[in-house]
Length: 297
Image (cartoon, rainbow, N blue to C red; front, side):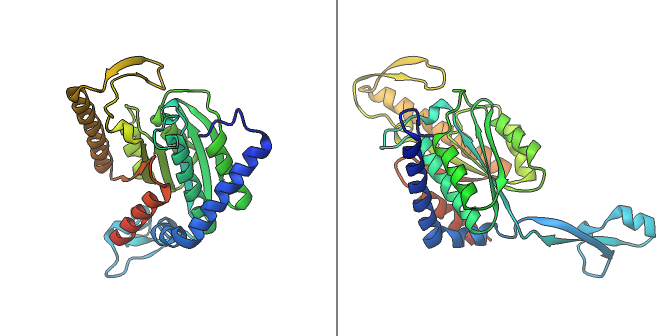
């Protein structure tokens, strides 16, 4: 999220409107069709029960009604006409890092704005949860252009108090406030641990998508001599000799290990991942994801 401490209210409003115009154009020209085909009609709701007929799926038998009447009945469902999209946005201090011209948090906010604009254009509800090691902001799902402007403003300029990350807290909050099935996008760098069980539990209830945000320097070190680095979340400092090939190789191996562990976790939980790089527009990654899902369907 962009630091709004030095911006006037007028400048904040201008930035929000600029982002809204860019995302609205992208959604109108490119993204809306993919979003609609991938997410529309994904949810189902109970409609009624009726007597069993030959060819019905036995998994839809309502055993309570069957026992009451002495012959089989099945449940009927219908597609929901409306979808709810929840954007769980990581606001921890590690997002305020960037070597490609933008912070990771700015790229994350851009992705949130695009997803919100696509949802609103398709007449879906969209809500926002900003979290650090706690849930700091909850914007309940609503429709309409004024609402999406609020979502964009909060994504860009909300100032969290916490510095650390606790993804499990955000997922617990989403599960508590969003009882009906929703499309949930967790937008984070996933520099955290201990959220695996809650991730799997949320994926069973909702259509959960992980949007992982990385910066190029988190994957490979440049050769720049002695460099003092700081952990943004803990404030811990460390001196790194980037002129050493051994140090650079170890750094890259550790980064690859983290990436593979994260991908493996998402695969086990049956979660799709959108890999978002700070050096490339969010639209590219979102389009790639929607095309992949559309082809899979």
